Length: 435
Image (cartoon, rainbow, N blue to C red; front, side, top):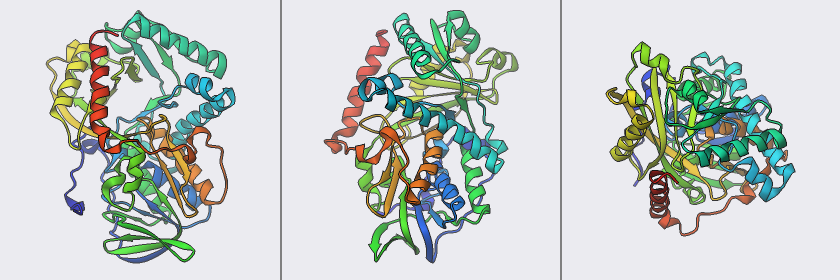
């Protein structure tokens, strides 16, 4: 059954409530010609459109719902120079040269966000680069975090990584439950929906056609080009970019790519504004924070509100059970929040891959893709737009382990949700007993 695109709900998020008004884009009607048709108006698609246009080519962007409706408007707004696979793991499996290249790509991604914010003057994105603290919940995980930090300093040259003792983490977070941690520079935070809307407005002002409520229901080859069909129109182009990530199954045209991803629902909560004395006590440095448990939680302070998020929501809709679990975890870290009401609860899909890294490149002579950001997509998807533009121009950029040839389909795909629930349940049990 074809979705009612106008009826698909937006996230009940802090970002929706505080974002700049959304620019209205037209619905595609009739035919358009382009050098490149881009399917999806998230960070990947809009960054690609920008970089392709800067190359002197003509892109057209087609969005099934509205720009920012998917993960680009639902995430936590955390900017990190990392992959789910650690650089030390990359080094062990693929060698030092590959680890260094992946390190370069990761740091290029955070710089790309800053570049795009500056390029388009997106001041309301409220970008910060104050760093991220990984807070350890026991001595075992603290030792592992310190070992990793020391390896990064020694082998990757991350000289600014700082080790924090229990007091240092307490001063950073306002919480007494952590035994220590590691401060990584360069990471930061952003208002993700204002960033997205700034990108969409910026590329449109520079002449790139962006169409909303224009789902691509069919991609077909025609002559020496490709045609993207929507319910009311079509775009004829030389090349196509699929930038739909975990929302690839919205239409049949991109649904086959969903089999390369394990969509994992990530839930978030945000408190009401805190009293000034409490807001000043919790997370006073304005950094972002993660913890070391297997079912990792992360948190940050935005406009005197605590935002708290993590994995563990299941199914296709928001889960009250997941929100309750987040609140319990939040109060466990910050007991002072026990009586503070929640103002917002929302969730979105994270695209996980079998090898824990994103993938980008050509899937055939006319079609390119970038997807699978594994929960660290704000920065990486922004950068992938630059690499997609290079591929469009016929170049072969060095994308390291991100090469699409490494992308594998999920085995036993129909069993993915029960398998995710089973693994997550085991992780939750280990976290509960302190392992």
